[in-house]
Image (cartoon, rainbow, N blue to C red):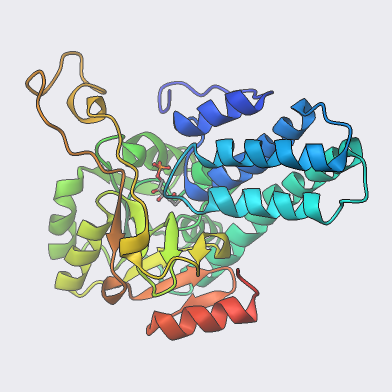
Length: 332
Ligand code: MRU
């Protein structure tokens, strides 16, 4: 409904939660993770089993169901696995007691996300100076997290500290997260944000209007290749051409050491109507036309200047620096 209408959606069942993720009512990797944690708690409330074993079996069915709502953002399975750990660690308790502990764990995941984003913001802001222009793509913003966003967190912190940053938000075809969400939230927050169509990005780079590209991510593979909203890789390639640093903002929950490289990341394909019809009064493509609509692309590690996490800034070679980071901070 954004940017024209803001409505709060109350979700009470795992099915409603699944639909909300599937239909992008909640989207953006960290927000999907937080929502999934509450979703599996809602699922646990629906389980009638008396014994731990029967409860665990039902829990795992619900986990697989919620996990299937979207493919690419690893935060979804990260949060569900963390909730599963909570269940496994409390095998001596009753299902009712475990369910109550699951709510606590979901609250912790929510609260940690805000802290994580603020830390990411501090590291990100250290890469900028007053008056800089920054290009961003999709919505790695407050609307994709609990607060601050990841790639937008430096903008919020910069605003608190009078940095006078100039943000260029790519519209982000086909679902327009840049126009409908990023431009909306930064504009409402009173920042200097300029909206442009995705295919205008080379012009702002050519004209020296941006000093950096800040993007979020849905998954970082062990070698540093990164999946993010379709069009991100185009920005990475352009930035390389113009000699502009290209930074990926990734909470540790988006780093997937079990995925070796970008080619192993599953990319969600979405309905053709998003391209041909969705935002138009009448279809803007011939009836029955073949449509290619991948929701994400991979920016290869060689295009990424640095990855910004809550635990610091990671630089190439990523195969080494991500292993060190994951060992230091105990990433799976
Ligand atoms: O399809 P979406 O809107 O869920 O895609 C969102 C993105 O690609 C974001 O850039 C990413 O999830 C990072 S959000 C901090």
